[in-house]
Length: 239
Ligand SMILES: [Fe+2]
Image 1 (tube, protein in one colour):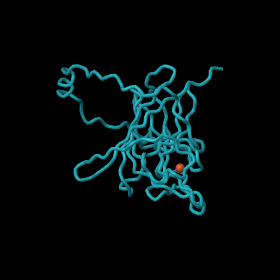
Image 2 (cartoon, helix red, strand yellow):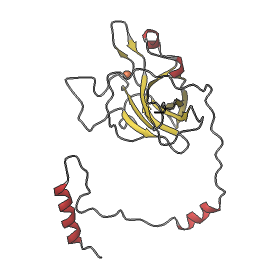
Image 3 (spheres, helix red, strand yellow):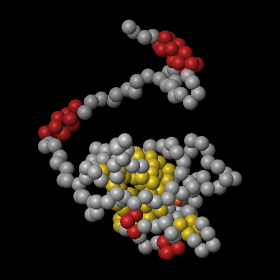
Image 4 (cartoon, protein in one colour):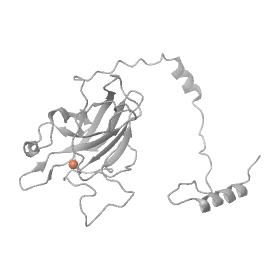
């Protein structure tokens, strides 16, 4: 049956009117996104190439579950899914962090793992650390969720977080919070630290197993740093 634009608008209007609180609906004028063409000759060229053979992933040095760490007071649920944690042009040294999530039981990479990430900005501030100025409900600064790909890989761009003071002589060294969830595995709450920061001496929570070295890189004239943080999840107890 052909649907007239008038009917479409009418049905969209009804749907909109009956939607419950918080339910998302397309606007009445919505239409399928137009295609701009096909792969055509390009597809034929691509198909002539032999399928790429991925090298076997490097195994973790130690087969132990990644050490948990404190949640801290600044987590916010429901951060958006994206691979850039900070707003565009945020101040600070750009970091590119990647890693692979593994199952301790199978010793294989885990696909579809949800990684919730949050961190301070380069001055050591979270977007929700000032009770006088709480964040807008759907605005998330320096926060994101990621999903591992079919090879268990994740990667994101951010800036190097700053240290922040929590006591007269106590600082939290720069760190990035992780909350990792996957069906059949224990939930992991942990933190990623960076080797060599002077604030690490007064911090009671830092762990060597969670500390990575950063490598200096350059994109044209712009310096940035890279680091790798693999995660090993322990299987959840069977019920
Ligand atoms: Fe923190």
